[in-house]
Each structure stands twice: as C-alpha cells, then as structure tokens.
Image (tube, rainbow, N blue to C red; front, side):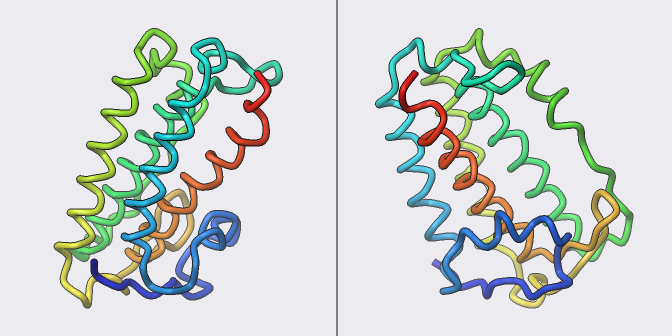
Length: 175
C-alpha cells in the first residue's frame, strides 16, 4: 500500500490531533485503515446484542449509532479529501454529527448490515487515497472553518475510528 506521510501542524484544525495522534508516524495510514477496520468489526461482533443498543450514559450513542457515525464521518472526510485533491478551493461547511446519529436509524438495522456498509465505505476510502496523484496529498482547503490537507483527512479518518473503538472498549465492554 502507498505511503502517506503524517500531516504537519497547520494542515488540520488543532483539535484534530486527538485523532491524528493515534496513528503511528510510519506513513502506513492506509494499511492501518485496513487492519483497524477488521479489528473494529471483530471487536463489535464479540459484543452481546443488548450491548449494541445500550447507552453507557444518558445522551450517549449506542454502538450501532457509533458504527453508522463512523461511516458518515468517513464519507464526509473522503469527500473533503477528493474536493481538495482536485484543487477545489470552495470552502466546505461542517456537519452536525449529533443530528446525523439521531436520524441514522442505526438501532433499527442489524449490526451485520451496519458493518457491511462500514466495510464498503472503508474500501472506497482506501481506493480513493490509493488512486490520488502523489502531489495531491499536500493540497489544502477549508472545511468547517479550519484548514485541512488531503493527507490530514486520511489521518483523521483512521484516527477517528480508533478514538471510537477505544470508547467502545472502555465504556461499552461491561454492558
């Protein structure tokens, strides 16, 4: 798989380091995406059906909602990466993740269906990044009022998944 160097400070919003920092600085972000998606699926399939729709606290998402959120967020960041890779200078808006989760209908879907969708989104994301010209990874745009390079979007996607898997492992394991 292609190597994509970690983005430098200034290529992403300051808060994004919480995701980007979870990915090893070895350039193998696409390899990590592939391996992490497999590990996330395996971890979720180990959970009881009741744990998949439980909330560890009031107002928190269920595991099914988290899986839908991972797909939604990844689609949006891959779209942003595509726009910036193609040198589109249009400033892109943010999105309200809580509304996306609320209206996802995730809890009415099977976990197999949600994971199948997530796998399809991940494969499309990896294909997108594999097919981009090398010079496009340093291109930047503005999304949600902050700068973002194409490679920062890739690292965000990979780290965002790990962030949520860590939440699943620490907050939902005993449910």
